[in-house]
Length: 272
Image (cartoon, rainbow, N blue to C red):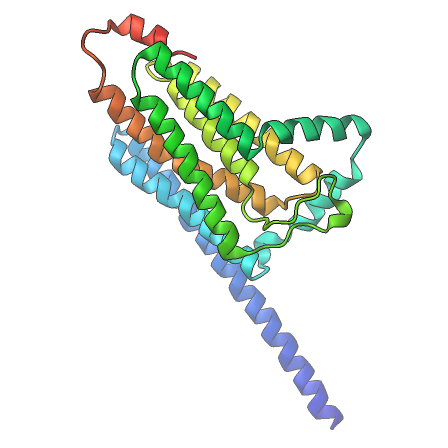
């Protein structure tokens, strides 16, 4: 009887170990595929193959989000850093940082992002006399937000414990809507502002967009309302949407510029 019980325990332990190892392998392979797709997209972009670059890059970002979703659903290896990272932010709280985090996360909220996007769209149309870039920006942000909402319902991940939340939130956690909206809007603004600019200027604008996204992501974890994988998925989702939106902007810029508008004047108008 004791031998049978011991064998059962060993079998159960071995099964758990091998299942976890298999799950880890799947996640690692999945991330490798996602990175490879984005890398191929980058190579194609350097070769001026805009269509191929957009397809491979967008697929890579989407695949990465899918891998994270599976990891979250199965409590996989990729979620291992969630609790330690959240604990680190909670351990380093202070009254000053509390107020700053609340201010930043409020500015990056869905309603605030939508309002800012509409204001920028109006200014963009007024200055450029073109509806295309503004419409692409709004549709990109809206599509990223809708995909985020759909994923929340599909994955159904619970928020971190309410005992560590500085702002009570009870809806599903994965991915982060704040990060998705902020990243999508800031990336599209960077792409629009960088049109027909030098590589250095475009890189600067994209760097600012990334910094804003990281700031909002950190506040979401600091406030105890999101896990690390939540904010990463939100950023990747927005990057995929912005990749497609950037290609549409490129097509509009290369084929939809009014002939009557001098290039130098157009550049001045389109700069935000």
